[in-house]
Length: 414
Image (cartoon, rainbow, N blue to C red; front, top):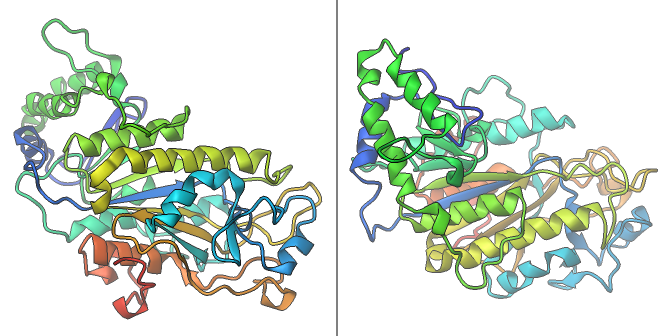
């Protein structure tokens, strides 16, 4: 077992992943995550897996062609939550309206990956690697975003975290990262406790290791996990008004809020939500898209409320692999499209505004005659968060091959 081995517990609640020397990483963790009171800016990325229908999420209700091309699945003008006279929110996003009015929420429309693929797998891979059209990229852009950032001598193992059973593509790379499925299910063996199957397997991996350095880190490893347990997850109560909906996504954001509030040194985080691939019976104000939008918006709104003052140093960016066709199909759904919509939420966000250039929905304005055309590369949006919020100015290393100059930012951050 070499020092570069990935320690990966696929079926457990915790995965520690890294290509640096694990012992020092865990020893630092055992000493302490981050000094109390430290100003720790955070970037949270939310992936809507399945290709969300941006046109029915942020509706161009003043665009006549929108209604002409979607006779049975459009969002009626009377139901749209108007934002600026042209765009409006799907009614299931009602919990976003206060965030918009408080100018904490911004929208970027006609955004996404410039790659023309309509494959879910390839498009998600490109958006997570940050290199559209390039399949050989080894790591993810969110991992690269923290690679050249200043690191404390006592850097936390929870510096980069994903809420889920395994580490996503976006966080793979040279920087250590943690994937957690459920912090409440992970228990550590010790006096008077019964270790979980995951903890037992974790301990056994070290006990049977022939590598003397790694073999000697079992104690430090469990100290790091105890650091997580010190947050006392079973007794966590969200802030007043933070009403997370039941389900995987709401649980993920509730646990992320807990980790941030426990002062464990979270700097970048990732969570995803599926259920957006609506080829059949997409619905309008009710139905499939309405249901997933309710879960999506209420979970994010609860997360924002739960963070309280910590939201001032937090930026949340949402994205999906591509949008849907401008026209509905014969099954009252939509097929794989191109450009989409992104949300940006946070204390430093100059919200209450739709950013990006709207390309229009006339036939001559559609991409390949069928899709919303892309006018903002998603790397412009996240590049601004990486550079201006997280302080990593080395964007060529984060997004190789992309001209991501500060002068081209949308300026959605104050």
